[in-house]
Length: 523
Image (cartoon, rainbow, N blue to C red; front, side):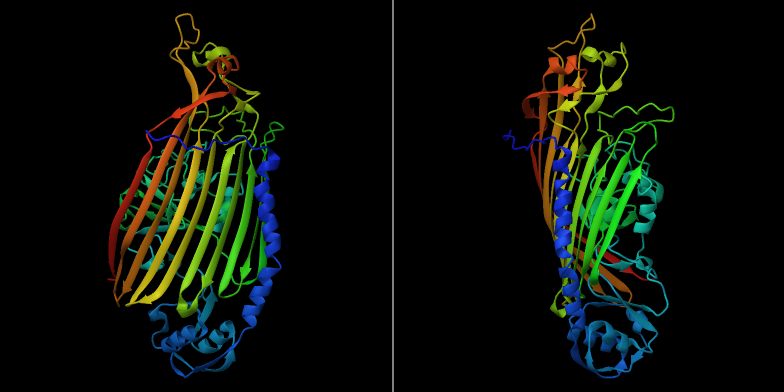
C-alpha cells in the first residue's frame, strides 16, 4: 500500500473564511478601471473595408476574415440574401450593421463573437447547446430530448433558499428530488445515474462520492443543459443522461457589476437564519472579455413545523452550520483567423463551521435507545465535514482544418471530501461500550483528475459527423482518522480528538483512452 499523502482539513474561523471573499472583491475592484479602458480602446478601433455588393454569405465571410472576428450563422439564414457591400472605415459593430442593412438580419454580440438572427426576433430563437454533440448545436437539430434551465428559472428557486440539487429536482423532468443534506446520493435521472459536468468537465469519479451538486454556487450558473438518456459521445457513465452546468462568462462592453444579498429565516430561533452575499464584475472588448465572481453563504440551524431543530445528519453530513465560498473567473479571447481561446478557473470550499453537533448520549447511550438524540453546544472535531474543489480548464476552437471545426480542451480538477465523525460501537451485556470492538472515526477522500479532449465536427448539407478522442487520468487516495474513544464517549460524540490516521481504501490510479463518433442526418 502506498504511503498516505493526504492534507488534513483545519477548522477555519470566520475571519479566515472571509479571506477569499475579500481577495476576490479586491481583485474585482482592481479590474474595474481597466476593463472599460480595454473595451473603449477596442470599440474605437476602426479599419478599412473593401467588400463588394453581392451574396451576403460571401460578404460575411470576407468581413469576419478581415476584422478577425468570429461570425456564427446558419447558411439557411443567409441563403438568397444580398448585401450592398461595405466600403470605408468602420468598427466591428457598425461595420456589421452596415453590411446587414436591408437584409432583414441583425448581428448579436456573444461571448466570443457575433451570431446572426432575423431582425426583430428575440434572443432565444434557437438556443445553442453543446451537450448533445460536444459542439455548439441548435436544440432543434438534436435528435435526443434536451432541456435547458436558464439562469432566471434557477434563481427563482435558489433565491428562495432552495438548495441547488432540490431546485434541479423540481425543474428537470425525470430527475429525482434530492435529499436535504450535502449528498445527492440516489438522485437519479429517469431511474439511472447521471453524468454531471461543469463546462464539459466531468464531476464524476471512479470512487462514487455523490457530491456533484455541492460544487458551485447558483450565482455563477448561466444555464443547465440536460440530455435525457444515454449518449455514446460521453461514454458509459451517463446511462440516465447528462447534466452540464454552464457557467457565466464575460460580455463585451464597459465593466458591469452584479450584486446579490439574501437572508432567509423561519423565525424560530436566533440561529434560524441563512445569509448570502455575491459580487461579480465583467466586461471587455469584442476580442477579449472576462468575468470574476465571488459568492459566500453561511447557513444556520433548521427547524421543523413544531419549532424543534432538525437533527443533524452524521452519515452523509449536513448543511446546517455550513459555510461555502465560490470564486470563479473566466477569460474569452478571440484570436486572428477566427480562432478562439476560453479559460476558466474555480475554487469552491463548503464545510461545517459551527460549535453545535449531534449529541449521542452519555457513553453513546442514544444508540441503544436508552436516551434521546439531541443537538448541543461544545462540538469540536479534528476532522470536519467539508468539500473543497478547484478546477481549471482551457478550450481552443479552430474553425477550419481540412473542412472541420476543431475543439481542443484541457482540464484539471482536484477535490478533497471529508465526512462527519461516526461511531462504530459495540456494547457489553451491561450496556457499557466495549472498547475492544468499538471505534470513533471519520474518512477523507482525495481525487486528482485531469485530461485532454479533441472533438472534430464535419458538416454537409444534411449530414453532420462529430468524432474525437478522450484522454483521462485520475488518482484517488483516502484515509481514516481515528479519534479518542473515551473522550468521544464521555462527550456524547461531540469531541473528536484524533490520535491516528490510517488507510481507508486502497489508492487507485486510473487512466483511459477512448474514441467516439456520432453521425446525425436531418430528415
